[in-house]
Amino acid sequence: MTTPPTTPSEFAAVTDDDLVTGEGVALDLPPAALGTRMVSGLIDVTVTVALLFVVLIVVSVATIGADEALVGAAVVLISILVFAVYPTTIETLTRGRSLGKLALGLRTVRDDGGPITFHHALVRALIGYVEIYAFAGTPAFFSILLSRRGKRLGDYAAGTHVVRERVALRLPLPTPMPPELAGWAARADITALPTGLALAIRQFLGRADLVDPASRDQVARSLAAELAPYVAPAPPADASAERVLGAVLAERRERDARRLAREEDLRRRLWAAP
Image (tube, rainbow, N blue to C red):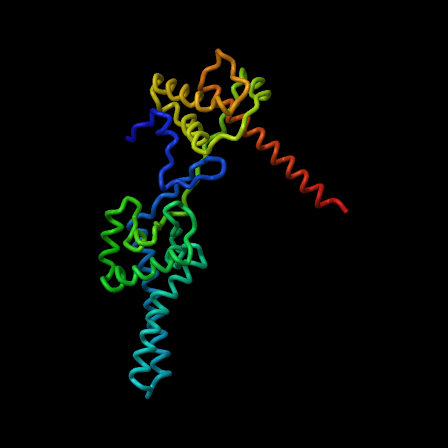
């Protein structure tokens, strides 16, 4: 079993696999498993080979009696179109989803979690021709097997990896407002928190029950000290650090909800104006 984090830095750490929203919430999309990647790749290879076969038949019929050099040039051009242009175009237009990935709920993303571009798709396609078609997928198989994030050689070259999109997203329940701190939080001036600090506090409050009492109190006090410059006036002296953290997050959530409601009301009134 993984040991729960016991220091603020461990709670604040955002790994390369985390997608962080503007609220400072890390959404962890798991990397695609080897078996899923193999099935997805098999679908893509089947479609690509079938496409190549159909195009070659059409070109063969169209070039009957043509010069051998012309036929050879046509075959080279067709290979480039099928093995490089086709997968690059598909992944670029779909933001990282080939036909096989669409079927299995996978997606190629950048290492920072963002959508891939034409450059990423092209590099993956070019390297993929070598590792998948030229060497029958052997380099890709062992690369995915040995990689923590299931990266094939094309992913290493392009700076990408494949994740599973069809996962159940379970968000923790909102932190309740401690009743004894509601008055203080309502009057306090709370500025925008840095993303790392907001994420660290959320993660701590969500995992506090997993931490032993001594470490729990130590981490709560440390996070409260980091929070202090962003809140005025200071909380009551007898308030526990953990309750203060919960009060600040709850108050920020309520203020954000009220702000969004005001903006929505303003938009409705503007659209309703003559």
